[in-house]
Image (cartoon, rainbow, N blue to C red; front, side, top):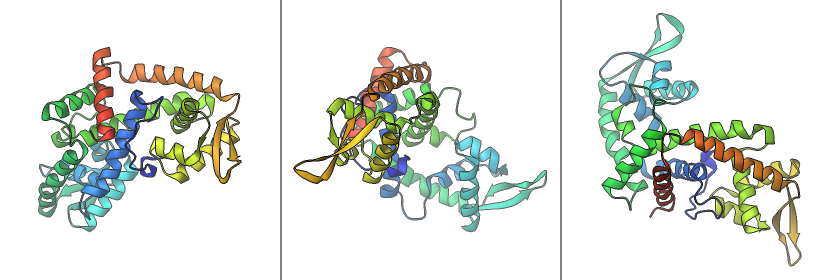
Length: 294
């Protein structure tokens, strides 16, 4: 289940309301949803990041740009092609490697970067309406501490100042690490969230799970399908409303969930190791407010 499949639910989930990994996913989902609401047509946030990294007029390879703005090479290839089509970069084959391209920002690209910066700042304001400047800076510093040594040394300063950028980058790393830890249990982080929700609330309708987790109905159906095949949940129709399917945990789910919780704690300890207990609690509080929009 990807961030693009999230819904704009602001409610915190009982049992996960103080879990940094879940909160980071919810925060990253909110960033992704806000991109479409705030940014104007034709502006792509990855394209903006690439134009920032091309400041100074020095040609850069697509591979180095991908490293600088912390996206996959596949994503950067698509972004570079779109920027070239719009005349915002000049793209030529790298003489040293004919399979790769070298990019240079054009004057039109420099103008677009200046124009788009205002919209990027509007995005930050939309994401943190209830935050003071001091609270924004506190959250930014905590996120940078979590990412210490993992971002490229030449990451553009506007990206280092962006809560949206930092949240999505921390989420990607958290999700990757937790996914790897859960592989022996044959579940993924989204399954952990669903199992925790059902364990906390008891048997619950599929639609309510989606509302609580802030994901689409189609995503919930797919997750329940997966967990049914794994033998961890089952659907039962209500006797008084045959249209409503309620999700129940099966006997083996408790053991899997207990082990998943242990793995979650271990993964978080490694990921948040740069923070002390007070800083971790502050991160949780600020992420809760970020998710709920308070």
